[in-house]
Image (cartoon, rainbow, N blue to C red; front, side):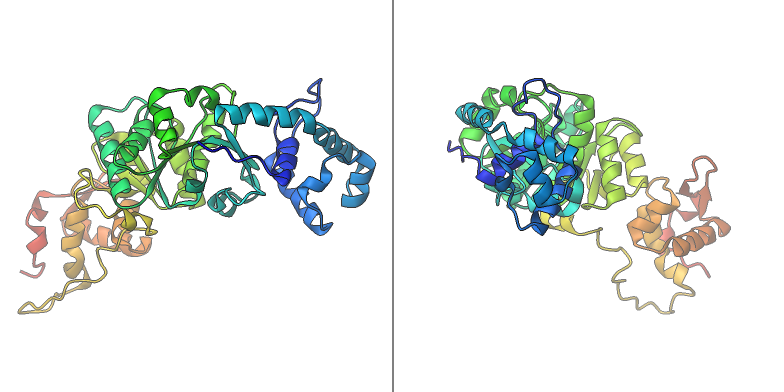
Length: 401
C-alpha cells in the first residue's frame, strides 16, 4: 500500500488548521474551516500560496495579507511548527495514513461544492485516495438494526458494486459497516467517513484486508487518534451526504439520533436525493413524510443510477393513453387510480404531493374532493389521508356511474 507524501501547500494547511502538532503550551488554536476559507481568499488576493506562509513572522504576514497584528501572530505561531509536522506525518505514513487537504487534487470536489465555507480543510485517511472523487451512494442507518435491515444494507451494497457505484457510509457498526462490506465482498469500492479513531480502526482485520486490496478507503476530518465523540459524529454525518451523489436511509429512529439528524439536514440543504426504505417503521415513515423518497423494500430490479435523480419519476407523467368508451368526466376521475396506488397506507398531504409530483395546492384540492365523495377519510392528529371502504375498487371507479 503506497502512502503519498503531503505536499508543501498541504503541509501549510495542516499546520494552520489542525492540532496534529502543538505549539508547546497549546495556547494557539488552529483555524476553523470558515477561518481557512477567509484566509485562502486573502492569499489569492495577495497572489500567494499556502506554502509561502511557512517560516513567515507575524509582521510580514500582517503586511502581505492585510491582517491585524493578533491574527497574523497566531498564524505565524501555527506555521512555526513545520519540523514537528514532518515527524508526525512520517509516523502516520508508517501506519498507512495519508493527509489530503483542499490544496490537493485528491480532495473530493463534492465537499467543496456542497459544503462551501464549512468543508473541512484537512482529511486523514487510509486506502486508495482516488476513490474519494468517484460516484457514490451514501447508505446510513441504525447501529442496532435488525437482521432484515442488515440484509437490505448488504444487498444494496452489492448492487452498488455490480453497477459501478461506490458506497459512502460512516464505518459504524450496524447498517454502515454492513453496507460497506456488502459492496467490498462483491468487488466494489467503499468509503467510510469515520469518527472512531482512525489509528485503531485500520487495525481491524476485516477492514485492513479490504484496505490492502484497495477496495476500502477510510477517511476522517478529525485527528487519527481522536476518540469517538457524539458531537463529532453529528458533524461527520453531513460529510457522508456531501461526498455522495444520492443517499439511502435503511432504518432510523423517529425524530432523534444521528441518522435522523443527518437525513433531515440533507433534506433542508438539498445536497443529494434522499431515499428511505419503505417499511413499517415509525422513523422511516416519518422521514418519508419529511420529504424522503420511498424506496422499494425488496430492491429487486433496482437501477442505482435512478437514485441520482432529484426525485422519482412522477406517476402522473406521462399518463397512459386512455381510450374508454367515454372520456373521464373530470381530471380527478383520470388521476384517482394513481391516488389509490400511493394511498396503500395512510399518508400526509405532503407525502401524496411528493409521490405524485403535484403542487401542494393541487394535491390538497384533489384530496379534499376525495373526502367529499366519501372515497377518503382524514384523521385530525396527525392529519393522514386513507382510503375508505367505498374505494376498494377505486382503480376502476367511474364516478358518474
